[in-house]
Image 1 (cartoon, helix red, strand yellow):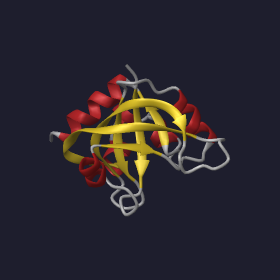
Image 2 (cartoon, helix red, strand yellow):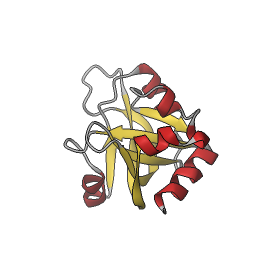
Image 3 (tube, helix red, strand yellow):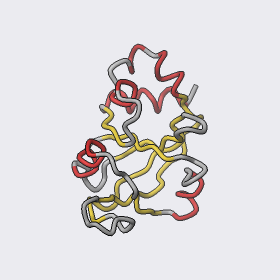
Image 4 (cartoon, one colour):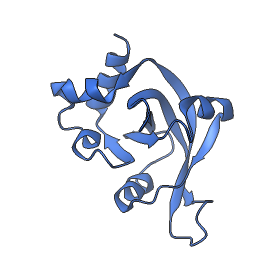
Length: 135
């Protein structure tokens, strides 16, 4: 199993929106590195749902329920999307500030490449963030 962090602006699509829908297409990603990360996702992988721009925090865990398919918002056929389902709300949101201040997360891709909307997370980083959410 692999782990990920996927960002969404909460005023566009929030954790609560995903919970209401249950399952959603993660579409609109137009960065090549983020697309490569999405192509590497497998059914059953887990990802943090991260509120970007507003909040700047991991708020929930979602599961990849459908691997790469054509992005329904892309008429060119160039881009892909994956489908995700809400799994668990984090006990408490984990802020970017908290992540940046934690030495255990110093090498986390999202911190080193902050503008990347879809990034890998190691198993250790994933478990550590879940633990931080319980404080």
